[in-house]
Length: 316
Image (cartoon, rainbow, N blue to C red; front, side, top):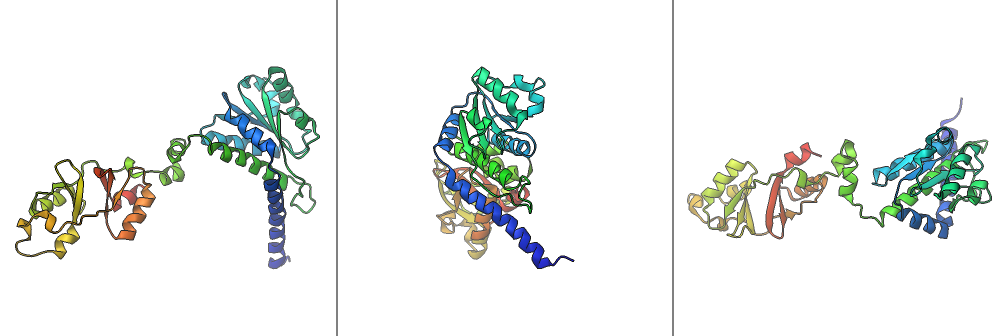
């Protein structure tokens, strides 16, 4: 029976081997990486990725990553390309070919088609002297590495490094494109990512509980009861925020003549305000941290809307 200690040790060794490869890759990035990024930033058409076997799976994943960040990308299977799908490639496209050896015969038809039609090729390979490398416009060379399996031959470290190289290209390109959280959310409307990027602008109620600064406390109570946000936002004639009154303020100030007093007697002058692009998750944290149940969304002291903790929790 294999010991637990030995199994865990072998797992750590496999990871260690791949980490060493990653460190080498990080140090190896040079002018070729710069050229690849510059070329991709000039892309006018599609980004097409291809590879065979495990390299094909990596190419497919990288294509998916680029697409999810707004760069139109697709995976072209090299065998299908040789049987009619080469027509997908247009002159304004850029092709990224992945092959650890750089000698995968299945991608030769793609290489030849690109060379004949003036389509730029970026390669990701471990062999700088390979036919793929020699026929590429820009080459990203994976440094010498050791595969992490016991025989040292299964595509493990090599595929990890190819994937990281592709992700590094995508991440660097996004740093120079107008792509923000909202852009990312537009491509991920469903699932947990979409929810995590939801902003309070999408859920806020624009019918906020306003009360004039000249009002009596009684009017604030009526508005608070009607709107059910547990607070009243005190504004001047120009709708500028002057303060806030909460149900807690009412309880703490309760006395016989309170309702006839001016609302300014109990309002707090520095309510917590957030902008409309605040994430729902951040809004929840702000309310919890400050022990409040409603949050005012404002811009330049003008109220845009209001949300409460329950609404945020329901939309997190």
